[in-house]
Length: 90
Image 1: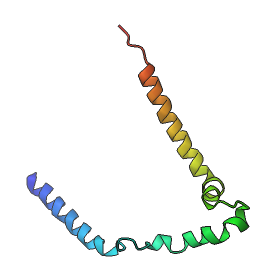
Image 2: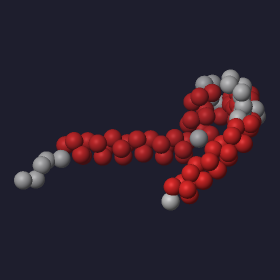
Image 3: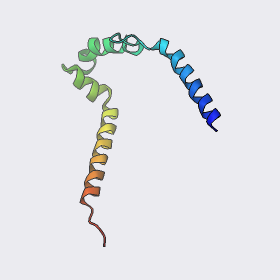
């Protein structure tokens, strides 16, 4: 069993070393950031008529995602309140 674990660990290490060459240098934008950021900055006001870019992205373009994230945070807070407020049953 230890041989299999060691083999998987070494194999995973080689995969990480091989994949490291695709990581951008520190401080440089990655390939995903090359086009999307400029689209948001250039076309925010034309498409959403909102002056604040962050508000336009969160409320207009990613509104459903933001609503889902808000629901998850609300459910987690509610669960914490329920757990902390639960009475002990004797």
